[in-house]
Length: 467
Image 1 (cartoon, rainbow, N blue to C red):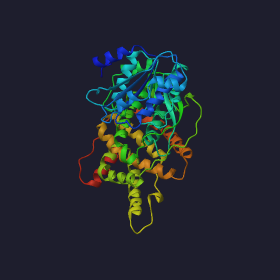
Image 2 (tube, rainbow, N blue to C red):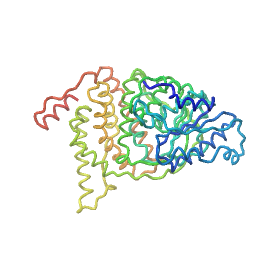
Image 3 (cartoon, one colour):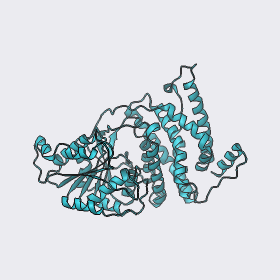
Image 4 (cartoon, rainbow, N blue to C red):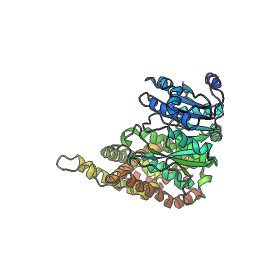
């Protein structure tokens, strides 16, 4: 378990800041181009909305070579913010930029946030707000929207409610939102949103946990925070922030490592906290703060050909592993889908046909995808396969699911595409009773070992029967 206390050198620097009421934390790595805007907005939000509180802004950086930390310190000083807002705060805003220490030799967003938690705990803050360092849409009001429910409403955890482009947030839309909702019964739309508010009590709870893993030191941190808040009995809510404009990522090109870290973390937590979700039925809305906003987030291009090609390659390279992960009927469906994907790619890439990716017709049903994720949860429970190998086998199937959603939503507006996310969430809820029954029957606890190979086709058949 990582140390709860700050390293001595950092502890001395934090001690000089003295106690504080509210803190904004900004984790970063090579964000010199955007972090200045984030810092200005955060400073203005602290001065404008919390003039009677003692505020602190902390940047936890990974040692960026582009001078990210220097930008934070040199960005327009707090007294300038006070003049332009015509607000005279009771306490001067203090700022700090540091290079965070790794956690057990692993660095990443989670390691940065652990340092931020330690500083917030040492300062004794009532509310901690964390915002991403690549935001282009943040405004000063975000600080109030994320801290207000804690300081005014008594909540402990505040997640964001964004308007995102229809192809953005694919890990959230296909896994973390629908799975978290079905398991714990709370409709937290952005459980890994990146921008959030945390009470001082919940910060202490995070630092007391003993299940910190290397994935949590990276991008697994957001879903870990959400699940720990829920299972710890803390009051959760969400807040409307409008459009999220940041550095977008193509799922097929950029999200593989993030997907692995997030999904491995949520699967581990599903096993660890089964006593919290086995008896939960259905779902309900959570308190939502802030005024309804309408905005058009910028478009994001997704390479459907790349996604389908990764799926077809995955069937060849990982088909035997798939047969160990999912039930036989799901394996049969994946075989069929891989054949259809190969045919669609052939149509798109042949020089004698006018077909393009926009013409592709391809679909993985909501029910099939939900049940695949539940199969994986049972596999994770049984520890019959190393988590890294399990997730690596899932990634091509995830790419295929994203391709299916992109194709289905191509003629929809962002608002219309939200119905697909809601439909997916309902499919998870509908399939949950089967998961609960299999879990209570002990499925996944008995190791499933493949028979000795005789031929490629017979091996697949035998493994499918054992899946």
